Length: 103
Length: 478
Image (cartoon, rainbow over all chains, first blue to last red; front, side, top):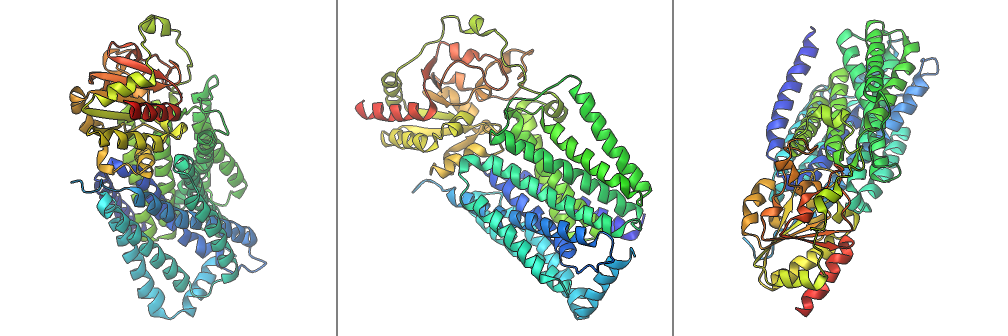
């Protein structure tokens, strides 16, 4: 197995274990905002889309134009989740209030 | 020819100063990954949750700016157009979306995220084939499989939640066998492509099979299983982004995707436990496909007592402790604000009021909490199953609004019931139970509910919102 793939697997394993520990502690009150926040975070795939969409493909490059179209569409889709995900999570969390003067 | 994109990347890297792409960008990615972990850590409690959103945003800005800078020379025209289009879709979906529609918005955003990963994967394959290393190719095929199937699956879930499609399970003969053969075919074609990445004529076949399987996976899912399925689609979308990290050897992507994947996994496990069912049963069981069992007369036969608003108001006025149990029916009737008004009225009379929230009440995890928080119910009054159940025997009145299966005592008593062993809210232990419901029709499990015929239960037949408003009016006369 090549070195890079192995280290990627290590990162994946540790991040998953960390994620399971951290997310286990999220109060059931906030499960909906949790889902919208993790959805926004995983829209980090916009980074991969930017790399594909941002290149200039010479006309002789096979599938260059198609790749550009796919990349641009992917940037738009992922970025809508980035913007929308954070906005709606914050909008939901703003609504969670304790009772006035309560414990 | 196939080295072209790599050559372009290398050229772009050369344009930027070495220390930017060599040190600054990886550092920005590292900090971004840490931000994402902290975001989820701070989300654990309402007091720190908003801080979690802010640090998540910081991480995202670092990652995007880092990528734009690190790539050096980019075609900004199309990027700006794409980013603007994304913002134009994303902002209205977040700002104007009513809270009752959050489940379908979530399904839609899973579809978008998964589609983005699948499209990036497709572009990567088409540009670099056939010179893709074995492990990259495996990750790439899995990324596209999960991406495409989550895309159509989430769209299907969106259609059901938005009620553009029928909410009941769609079933046909040999459905599971057909579904599994489509999945097997997709995997088979995927394996061939991994072995011969140059066989690109098979690629469209793979895409179509993955898209078809996504649709077929959601056909047999009914409304009551939506919380589990949305959580599962969440996990798939996250894993797809994570696999993109494997393909691009970007560890920040792997971390962010793994966090999303584990979140979806935990939520789906919680949902399955809250229904005492397995993943396989949720996905392949077509739960709620049987509309009627015809048993209603035996259970209800003349034992159901109905009450008027005045009678219920009198009961509530005399109570010391009231527990309100909301279900999906409250969301459908948009009754959350009326329910909040009822709570305030009762509290002004010195009555203690709490809310009992079952994990699968509603159409997605946490659905009821968000609706009630929107109506300004303080969150410390929203109690989960374990916290509220021991208190029902000290409760004078339990008011059930639009919930059915989650308060059905058959789950405790009838081992042959489809909901046997499902943890329920023990409302029947309260001194009096008031059930607000339009009729005696069964809930999603398609079974009658003996609670409605219990000695201590009063039925208040009405639409959820109208009923609560009538109660509030009647309370003012007591």
